[in-house]
Length: 555
Image (cartoon, rainbow, N blue to C red):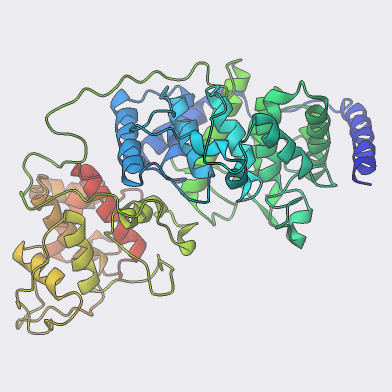
């Protein structure tokens, strides 16, 4: 029944193509506009992701987009990223994840984009896990899709995995994708698998786009070519009048991105009549989410993760530009960058600045891959995951992180001490800090190194909520301990803060430190207001400390 439906779908698609050919192709967005948006977004991503980590946000996708965009990026940027990957791989003994094998695929793709061999990273072969068929397909269709994209990105041979229950081949992954194709012609994450639910019975544009990307190099196989045409017909039917796509009932930038890349990988023009609706192409739609100097929105209402949408929107535009200019596609990396090995220096990356206090030490990765279910749409996900991996910050008892929750003075003192690697010591400096309290030794260390002050009368007020300006003051003191120059003259402080309409509402004792935090990028100057009296959120604290550690060369 499934194959009969597909044959009917193919016939309908042929008819729709014939009808569609009478509709003149239209693309409101010009190549020059795309090129300008690529350069603008590349600059934004490069500024926002100054220290890319191993992660889906603020990591591999940013590196991929920059490496394939042609934007001028210093070799040191990619060298530092590679050093971070090596440190991460060593910390987890080459096991990036015991179940989610897309972790390997994502890193392989980024390394391939900068000309690094994923088969030898700190002595580990990151392609080897993809030789295990059963483990690769465990997480759904994402597994085989990204295994193919990763292995094909630099034409890696299929790795031999002697520990695998079933040794994988490329053809096995191709067949897995084909057998999971849905009756409507597309794909979903668990559709066609034992884990399929009712919601998996309808094609999802994100997964369908990715599946098409993975199958793009195998169009010489009749079954692949037929499945591809059926999927294209399905997506043409799903495409909205504005040229975009919806996933889980919401129109968003990322779904459009995956279909743009799919067409580019297949060598299909973005103004193909099947994908022009009401005069709008997918590229036209994607550009409606673009904001000059600010990246991309997730939805038109601005909800969701701006950074996630920005990184995907960015490499989607890069794919479109490369296609328009006749260059190799996003994932066909015969023209990948060739980043030279970093020149070894006496001070290796992550060892801190020369002027730091000897007690300050970089924290190693102890919990690679640690994350929290409630930070998926947090703009600070990279910072949270990077600090969590190093044991600097933790979640709540329910397993969530609570990114929008406030933080107490005791909690803040604790994570600053952990971030700097200071030795906890209970000094009994404050009368309201009981020696049996879990935070007593951290508050003691923070007091010893003058990171914190009390609130008067020998009290610390450990349970008090910390404000944004108080956090800025403490982080500024931590920066000084890390060897950063924190002094600013009165004129420089005024000039830095004058851009914020509410700067006069900040306490005079906090202004110099606030100015330093903005100058150093610890706080973002893209924010409209300082909001000095507001309670600082847990996610904001993570971002501030992440930015500090990056500036202080402690990551």
